[in-house]
Length: 480
Image (cartoon, rainbow, N blue to C red; front, side):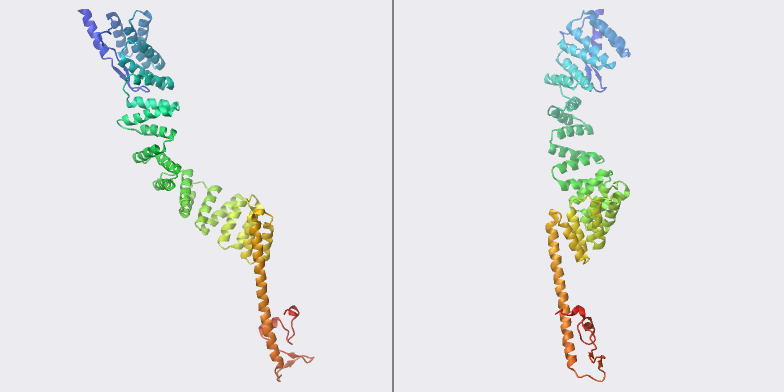
C-alpha cells in the first residue's frame, strides 16, 4: 500500500512536469514524462528522480545534474528510465546555460526510441532551436524538419526560427515557406514578421511580392523612412519613375528626407520628370540650410537646373561661385555659356578664353567656336574669323567653324557692297548737284579762288567726297 501511495505521488509529480520555458532562443521548451501503461518508472528510480526534481524546484540545478549523472553512470536503468533521465538532465543543462549539453542529452534520449513520438518530437524541436541559437543552422534545421515530418505541429515561433536559420545559410528557397508560415500563423504580426518575409522576397527577386508587402508596411508604419525609401527604389527598378517620384515628394513634404543623398536624389527626380525649376528651388534652399553640401558637384547641378529652367539670373551667381572656387576650365566654359545666353557677349568671351587657358576642356575646338560666336555678336568680325580659323585645327569643330567663316565673309562682302552703294549714290547725287551749279550764272555773291576757280557751298554729305571747288577728294578719286 505504501509503495502504491509513493508511486501514485511520483506519478502525479511527474505528470505535472509538462514544463515550458520561454527563454530565448527556445520558443517552447517542454519536457514530458510518458504515462503509457507499458512505460513506467520503477519505484527506486522514481524516488531518485523525485528527489532531484525537488532540488530543481529549490534552484539547486547543479545538485540535480550531478544526481541525474550518477543515475546514468550506474547503468541500471531500463530504456524508458534512461531516456527519461536524459530528458530531465538536458533540461537542467539548459538552466545551467549549457545548451550543447542539453542538446546532447535530448538527442541521446530520442535515439533510445523509448519516450513516444510526441515527446521525442518535442525534444527534437527544442534541440533544433538550441542548435540554431548556437549558430549550427544546418543541424538545427535538420532536427526540426525531422520532427515536422514525423507529425509535430508547426507553430508561428518555430516557423520564424526556421526562416531565420535558412536565411543565415542563404538557402532562400527552403526558408521562404517558413517565412510565409511565420507570417500567416502570427496572431499579432510584428515588424519582424514583415521584415523577414520582405528579406526573402528581395533575395529571391520576387519584386511584385516585395511591392505589395512594402505598401502594407508603409501604411502600418508611416513614420519609418526606410520603408518609403525601399518602396521608391522598387518602383524605380520597375521603371515606374513617376510613381517613385511621387513617393519621394510625399516623403519630402512629410519631413522624412533630411540627408544629403536623399535630398539630391529628390531634386534629380524633379529634373528627370521635367520640373527643373522646382529642382533648382529645392536644391538651392537645402544648400543654404546646410542639409545638402555646397560642393562644386552640387553647385554645378544647381546651376544646370537653373539653366534648364532658363533662369539665367539665378544660374549666373552659382556658376561664378563654382568657376572661381575650382578654377576648372569646364566651369568657366559653363559660366561663359550662361553669360552668352544673357546677351553679355564681352563677358562671355572672357570666360571662354579663360576656360581654354585653364585647360581640361573636353572639346576645346567647340570652346574656340564659342569665342568666335561671342565676338561675332559684338560685331568684331575679324576677331570672330580669327577664332573660327583656330577652331579649324580640330576635326570635330572644323565643319562648324568653316561654316561660320564663310558666313561672316559673305556678310562682310555684303556690307562692303552696301557701303559702296551708299557712297556711289552719294557721289552721284553730288556730281549732279555740282553740274547744275556749274551751269548756273554766278551772282555778285559768288566766290572765286585766286586762280579764278568757282567756290561752291557744298551740301553736308558732299563735303565727304569733294573739296570747295568741286574736285573729288584723294580718297574718292576713281571710286566710280
